[in-house]
Length: 415
Image (cartoon, rainbow, N blue to C red; front, side, top):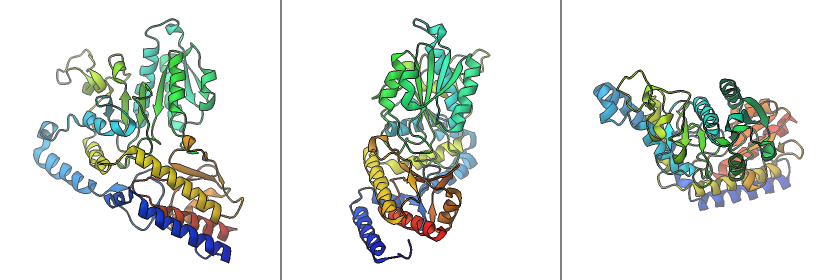
């Protein structure tokens, strides 16, 4: 509240403001904020679009003016354009707990989900007792809508039945009929973090394959793809990885599955001899099987530049700050916002929380519009959710305190 209503409220503002200052001074990641183009706005929408890394504009200008403008077609070799999908994949790999050679970058999240899900069904049907009876795809019932649309199309293509299942009930829904399961690591609406290790193990125990959507976890928390034996995963790069609007997604294929990965979208870029121009298709070795057509070089190289902000940054340190930021935000909301005006739908337990806080609010759409007008940017999810995403690379504790204070002010004024 910009103007506290009472002495008690004034004391709360003073105490939490002082606490925010101390936390910012102690923050080991605070200096990273200078790596981004930011202003006085409190930007809590990095879970939809990350801020612009300061080194990207000059890099993109070089790609356009020199690599494309002067070198032209020579840049496929001389500027490393041809190898960009796997090179940038190796740059993302440590952020999601993967060894090199297992991630390829290109296409959209939706396209990569389609590749992974159809390939998962095909692999599940290859060998083993009852393989030919694997006629069911399970999909996260709370998933982002596009994932559901893609899963439905993949089910039609493979002759499978599609069954929505709440992640917490997944183990009891699995059977020998299950071919593949599409799951979100973090619920995009509530910020709930699902148990990737145990759910992956449950899926594998029945001979099926899990496909994980990492859009709301990559760059926000440790994922441990190799550690937990994940077979297939997909993620976007424009949220916590700050790759820019529409930047290409990534596809992870575990090393021991790569020879079996049968993409439903074979293209010349994934051919063993891409310039052989043969009428028959022979897939390339390794993660390159995930490529399809000509890479989107401008977006790819902007993403590569953006990923440099991660130099010297530990994903474990990012996770620690993320939890501290979300804890402090909830503390400030509790202190500032009138009782009963909002309700957190994000789990309180750290092991169940991503890097966002979702608050249920009856007039959430209008409240968010006013927050944005007053310099606090989050977003609204139908019908009644205020969503605040915390990107630890550039969000500070002072930002968090200010956001909660402005939220309280807006709600008090509307009341």
